[in-house]
Picture 1 (cartoon, rainbow, N blue to C red):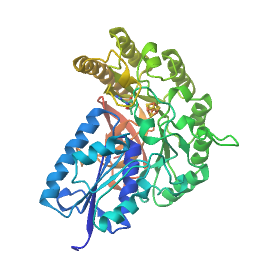
Picture 2: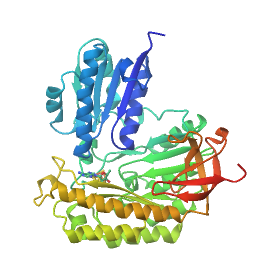
Picture 3: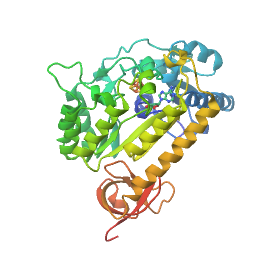
Picture 4: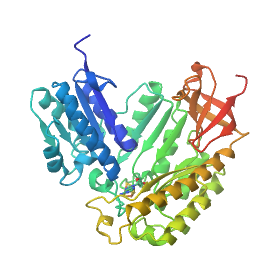
Length: 442
Ligand code: 5AD
Ligand code: SF4
């Protein structure tokens, strides 16, 4: 079997990036590549990149350096660097100079044209191509990989919000929504191949379909996806709080498979900072959304993203963020230090916060949220939850893991043949990140 070519795909960043990496890996199958985890025997290495924070970029630059050494050991390996980091204005010049050992450079807008690039490189030579605007029509985009229990399905691309700290609109372009019939067809195909849970992806799913006439919005789409037979669960990310409608909350409340979980990034608890971030809501409005969720769905779980150390963030602003964590009762929070992204509005703001202060605030925020997350999970003790069984636990293979509808990770013992099914699990113990439960009768 010496002639089988192997591709190793490394991914950095969000679910969109993961989904793009899946597409790239699928494209390489057409060239005879089989996915692998072993860099030493790889014929092609793809690194799908992220540039949302400097820390991600530094990690990726380190990896690109390591790949240079790999190429010295194994001269026939081809290296492709793709995605957001490459798409940043002016980045290609800098990157190609820094890493001449790379064979393919491609941005986010021309990922779907990767086969043309790979073809050229297989003939010998190197390619570097970044399109300024996406050219591919949305519907020819490769579909999610079939045969897996869970799948990510893009419902839209790009973002129009231009939060002042964020590079995403600069590297993923303006919002474009896929047609509902295309999305429904893709999910039906996935379900036929064994998929039981889909996560609908968009930078702001709440603005899905804004360009459609007659009117058809995200709640309408969710309602239709909910009718698909054989599917067990539907999740979605990310919801911008400013666009979270009552109709959407009601749809989730009434839906059968729609999981009662909202990822609702707050970013900051201070109105002054929210305004400078261009988030277009106040903490009061945000809290009114949280209240509405709890009113219509009492057990809904809410998770969030928070940035500390945004330019001009005072101690008082930060205190308001801490207070927000306690008021909103998040089940989980993803916390970040502000990272200056060139080309964004915030990068030009004065009063940037020194690194040591950002670090201190992050530590404090994480310790508050760990307690909140623990309290949330302790409240689960003694109650029964529906869990979709995903597979053996990575840390303890004698146990299985799965998630509740609220997206809390659960560890429990059960037969392997329950993988892919829904079980009722009674929670016995809780930590900040996971809960341990028991399946009755096992
Ligand atoms: N610095 C720090 N965090 C950022 N995020 C986006 N841009 C930045 C930045 N420049 C965070 C936001 C967003 C999440 C995906 O990443 O919290 O919701
Ligand atoms: Fe970035 Fe804001 Fe768009 Fe989210 S909504 S991708 S934070 S600009």
